[in-house]
Image 1 (cartoon, helix red, strand yellow):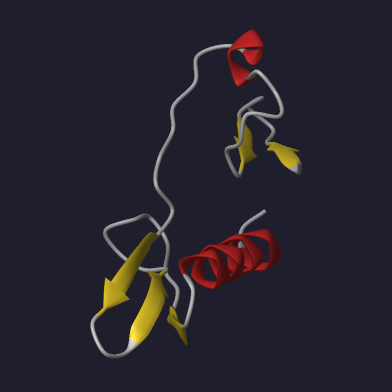
Image 2 (cartoon, rainbow, N blue to C red; image 1 turned 180 degrees about the horizontal axis):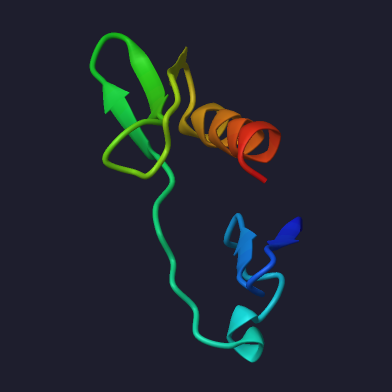
Length: 80
């Protein structure tokens, strides 16, 4: 789990339950993207507005898990 701490002491990470973030203070969780199914096409990860990212649409993917993995990889490479 990658955790970024900025100069103000704020933490940023891709949320999972491996670490109890509430022990670090107030927790605010914000969606970074949106993974959706497009009938006849496949799964896409939308990395743009309104989800606080300025990124592309990733996909299509045959499986939702592939779209989620691409979403995480994009965030780790471009945001964290």
